[in-house]
Image 1: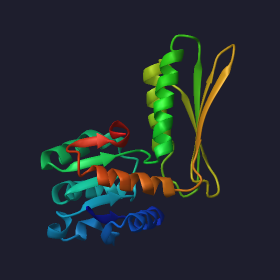
Image 2 (image 1 turned 180 degrees about the vertical axis):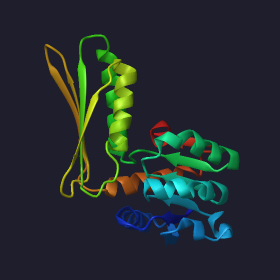
Image 3 (image 1 turned 90 degrees about the horizontal axis):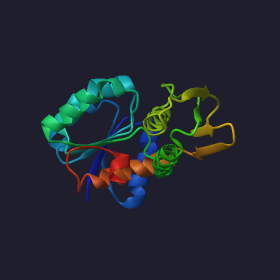
Length: 220
């Protein structure tokens, strides 16, 4: 059975801890500064990272070099993705990352891919709206960016993305595809962030059977 060290002990870190407890997985420690972790301890553990874009940018070299594997749910580092992948590849450390670890959102990705490909060349325009709580730091959300990239690739149209920050909304993502004849809406609404924690722990378990760098959706 895997052992886990959590990087970032905020709301998501606490939810990951609860999910680990449900599954009987050992939490070795939860850290606000992952670079202070004893490397000997890190080598036996999977790091589950839910921090900030700035923290992950500073910490990923240490995580890649010292941990057995890593699961990264932090977003906002797309511009250094090539550097991150190389660091983990060079270290031989398994990395599973996602803009959103929710199983439902990953099912949405699959549906958007299929529907967009079917509609290509038939006059459909795409719009994406994402709504999140006021504490979310990045906009558009990583999930919205992934949806946008999928639509652009499969439909051949770059969608407009609208970001809304209000209250404590866990996350709502809506893709609307409109033609002169009809409109299709694909929507995912999270009731809480627990789905993200569940998916991250599932990904941590996957590191036992996978090597290399992977997006969570690929493995699903």
